Image (tube, rainbow, N blue to C red):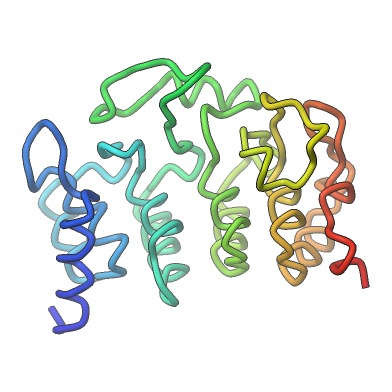
Length: 215
């Protein structure tokens, strides 16, 4: 492992990406994904690591790559998807409306929520949209059949005080609200149906656009 990769990997471990009540080491795949460490990811998968396991923060390795990964995160996302990471598993969040469960287990209730069109938390696609990761979004959209899936997103980050706290949005709502113009334009071009899909509360992606982003 390169010295820089080792440092990032250890930092991820220290931050709790790979720790939990069941003992250290169980979630090393999550740390490796966050560090974009392909060698370690390959080794762990060869050893039988569960590519869809949730860690103590309610993240899958794919979510760790999207949320914490650096410039090469899209390569890790593509690699994990190719090795059958489930791109539809959402971030699990504790709080109102979120059922309590063992975070170390694959959460089939979360998958059932997705099948109803509403995830328990943001999907990897929503998280990629929030960071403006166009390459990640392309790979995730190519892999998923839930292109217009609605998921909860913090109302404050969407900039619409009138929205219901329980409202759910698409990845295009998130990209538009975050000001990621390039990604939003690509989503509208490649998946025109997203622009016409409202949130559960009736807000369209255009409502999320900041005035400075309309030019």
